[in-house]
Length: 318
Image (cartoon, rainbow, N blue to C red; front, side, top):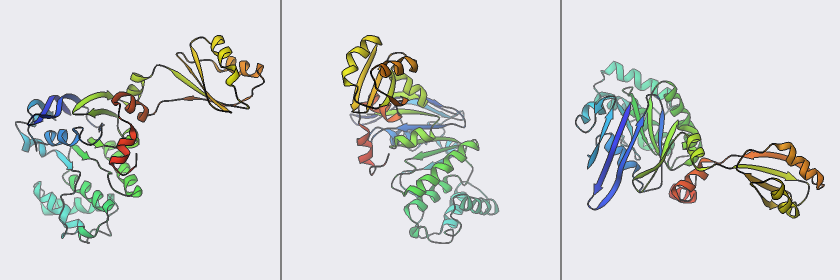
């Protein structure tokens, strides 16, 4: 559905987007994850035809966006970081106005506007001025407006930024529903948990460059080759470290507390010999579970940026 090749954007001597390439398959959610100033919005602006690249190509549904921006925009739904709807108009009229801009006839756009108000749970607010809406309601109506003409691809720039938890949950549910209906979605986000929950594939972008991309599983496998086993024990096992590591070659034991430890190994270990080792030391093992890296762990390792930086930039929520 989308092919981006060697895309570059400069502002004077500053390179905002630096020779990035990626493809997006039809019907998938592709995410850009990165901090402020990473190049996420600049990339979207080039992909939707609002900004011309210094170099590179963008093709959407076999349409060259740089040469034919209007044709490409006709199959896009665009949700910017800030709403572009009219404060004095009510929700229904805002949707109908957007439909008219896409050439929909009156009957068609009014029918679709009512469907979208129902889908986004905004029927009661449909006849109220947009300026009276909460932040979450404004965000939902803005997304609804982008869908009025049934676009093949939806661009979402920070879809849940600055809104309440319930509205964020509703928007995430709607994104999944749209994907299941066949819509291709490109989204940017600061929120690691949101990216992990929603995206089929994603890319980490830092200082205008893509530093890693793939599915969540591929990204995790690319940075970790060890296996970690967490044990809850009846007493402190610190006196057993040397003997354990001598017995289990290639393993490291790390004591977390008096009743908690982590065993790290290059290969996955059978549990029974470990339990037998501790039993001989008169240490009962109450719980054993394998630890999996989170997407946050991968992001920090790949980019060198602590996840706390992303939290601070967008209100402390992952």
